[in-house]
Amino acid sequence: MLSHTAFVLLSYGAALAVLAAVIGWLLVDRAATRRELERLEQAGFRRRSESADETLR
Image 1 (spheres, rainbow, N blue to C red):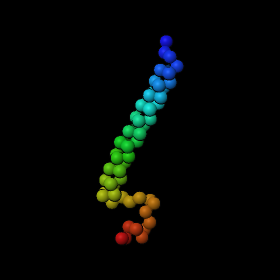
Image 2: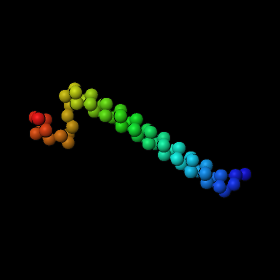
Image 3: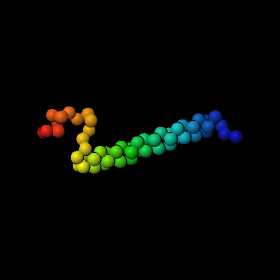
Image 4: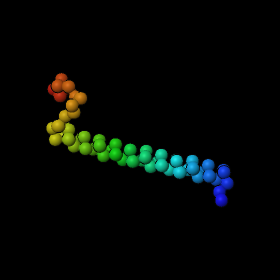
């Protein structure tokens, strides 16, 4: 049976591992989204948030 200290340390370690995995996944997804956005902008699509004045510049 685990001691209380070992249980707490393993719990913190598991939580840290999950948090690191989520942050890593977000960074990978962010890079993929930016690549996709760049590809779409090069194809002539523009963002809805972009005003008509900004497209004329």
